[in-house]
Length: 257
Ligand code: MF3
Ligand code: CO
Image (spheres, rainbow, N blue to C red):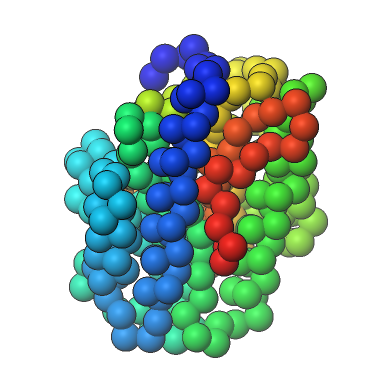
């Protein structure tokens, strides 16, 4: 991946807004599809159809060989779950993560949703993960650096007794799904990531991945699904944002998230 951070022109920002709007709409479809008895493949289908219907391309499909439009990750699965025959049941929590490319630009967002009644811990985990994103982006503006975001995410999450994943991070986004810089959700050890200043016109994905227990993760034999080692629940929340002089613009915002 290039280490050059792209600064978007006003025209490019407008195209990012359009791609992100479709991406956010697709996440809403995924959220609405989460109900008792649905297969993870059906959730993917709802997302995929929405993206195509809106003239966009599901960018996860075929990305490094990923076989679907949507990553659907249930309970102790953190990210990159492959949709399939698995049936979602009341009490499960389901993370939906997807990207859409429109007119050459990519949007990326994720969220974790409860199926029916879930445990208090699961409900709290979903809410803390979502709020961690909003705590992080308080520092996503000119005058701060990338690490300021992750530090705020980590402090908020840990103050609620949960932990943040280290092995996967947020990222820049634009013409490619993954661009520089990397956006960790924690204070990284010296040298692991670059800590650039935030500049007007950068577009980045801030995406806390939070575990109810320990933060260590494993990858299943399918080569994709990331799970917590201790089997604890995990949640994910992500938006594509635009850096400005003032508050960041959440490009993948929708009323129901
Ligand atoms: N949406 C994911 C991200 O946040 C990308 C998933 S890559 C895939 O970076 F191949 F699994 F789709
Ligand atoms: Co992402």
